[in-house]
Length: 215
Image (cartoon, rainbow, N blue to C red):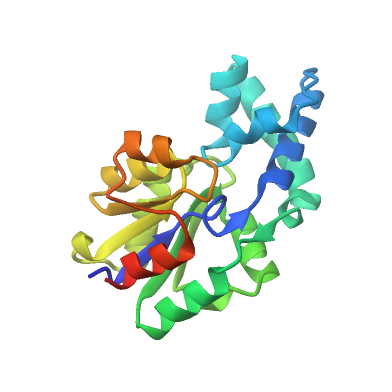
């Protein structure tokens, strides 16, 4: 039975599509790239921004850092508020909390933004630890934020910990930290991506997720 439950944020607890894609669009415009199709930017939801800018646009290190800084200009002002809490999240968190589970966030988003979003939706009190990326990039990967969360929770037996996420990065990060991963298909990755990544369990709705986490 899982005693420690770590949650990804974007695509797992919240629908952050609008704020992220519009902020990426803004950053690309600053870099001289016009991208009118927001849907084509949804791959930025989940992985570290720096990596995605380099992978998809061939930016060098300096350009990628410049793009991330431009993204944060917009996201820090309004993008973080262009967000929706998935239906079922408060009930899930309340149920897990009542069952005595220790909960944490493990997000590749900078901690400062994670905390603002948790407070925006009034779910911050449910979490015993909030692990996010650092603004200077020293902690940025999913593996790093998961490891940081496990340390914050003082997890002794990693068989008692699980990460809930919607992308293959979540599965890989959990695996690198020797914990299980529950993939959720209502986010931005989908069933095929999660299966190919090797998620230990897959939940298609909050009812299934609750059952898995309480089992």
